[in-house]
Length: 243
Image 1: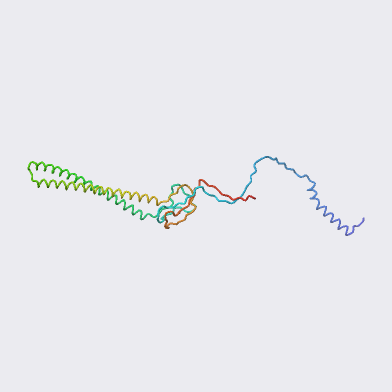
Image 2 (image 1 turned 90 degrees about the vertical axis):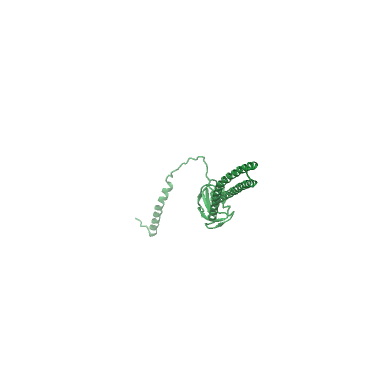
């Protein structure tokens, strides 16, 4: 038997190693590859586009008072949701309340004075009727020479005084009635002003800005809150046309 040389044995080992390494590759190449089938159907293709934009409302309102005053209360803050008619803020009503109390007191005093004058009117009317009767009777007695001209003059004088008293009471009553009307108008005006000192929501929505704090003084036209309606929103979006 022929003995292999060292070089031949080394070559044989290398060939054996290569053959062992090729076995998995040959198996992968020559084995059958499984096939998959797919049914192609027509359909809608959804394409997504991304962009940057802002969400805006179709209704925005800057709310403020049509009075000069000091903010006494703010019931909402930025990000709060609001409802139609909800009280949002109010002005300090100290002076206004005092004025309203004074005007109401004036109305009450004037009405009490009218009640007294009504009673006075009844008294002077009765006095006038009596003096008219006495003057008529004195005139008849004078014609019959039953009284002196001086007595007749006294009866006429009493009648004139009674008429003057009636006129005085009527004039006073008319003046007091005018005072009642003026005071009542003042009460109504103060009440309207008090209603204007309260800020209410004009619609359902959201507070996006609060520009004042409690204790701040505001004037006519000062924006207190900025609100937006949330029932009608739209978006302005910037999209890259090359995307």
